[in-house]
Length: 234
Ligand SMILES: Nc1ncnc2c1ncn2[C@@H]1O[C@H](COP(=O)(O)OP(=O)(O)O)[C@@H](O)[C@H]1O
Ligand SMILES: [Mg+2]
Image 1: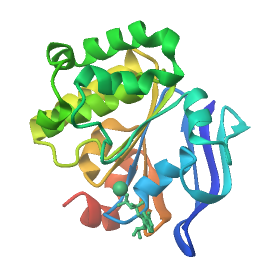
Image 2 (image 1 turned 45 degrees about the vertical axis):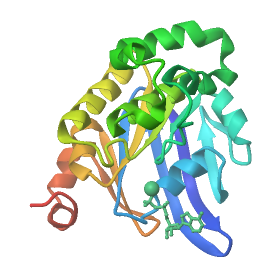
Image 3 (image 1 turned 30 degrees about the vertical axis):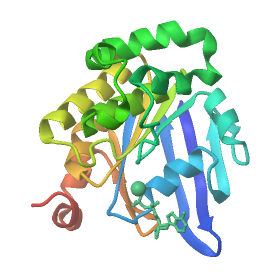
């Protein structure tokens, strides 16, 4: 069953259109990737699912339309978001940044903190540290953790590997796989790093200037010579 259905979605910033008739489905329990260059519309797509942009078309969660819902309502319905620039509070501790995410799911705080500390032992060791003094990888972990504090079934992650060293990218990939396999989450990631998305996602969509120009499994996309040259560096 599709947990998320995006149907003919267009998004606008004033008169400027950033997405054109984007349609895609996310099966429950899957990891899907959306790849595209800078400016393709990746953040706009995830922002639109969260109700943060002006849109046309329809977005459904478990067949119920969430178009026009406020972001807080979308979070309460089970969508967690780790945005591109994290938006952490730099002078607050790791723990307090995580608790910021807990306002919609207060009853689950202990269980969610447990899950986050299982996935990211470093965040427990450093729970009193200000996020301003953390590495990029650690901040990405706090950002993912804060999204998990909302008890999501569907997790949206915007460019999880941006600016991170290859070793840290592998750690992030491992956590996203565990969220799917051990915690039953459905995950949507966006990436400029196409190869990262291909190793992780079961289904990948290619976004170019606001339009989906190709969709398929990693094997199908890497076999497409036009995409191979533009995105996969071979
Ligand atoms: N707040 C905004 N106001 C106006 N235009 C925006 C805004 N955010 C993004 N855009 C434009 O929308 C398009 C898609 O941007 P974005 O979704 O950020 O792409 P990506 O995340 O793939 O880099 C770009 O042309 C960008 O300039
Ligand atoms: Mg972006």
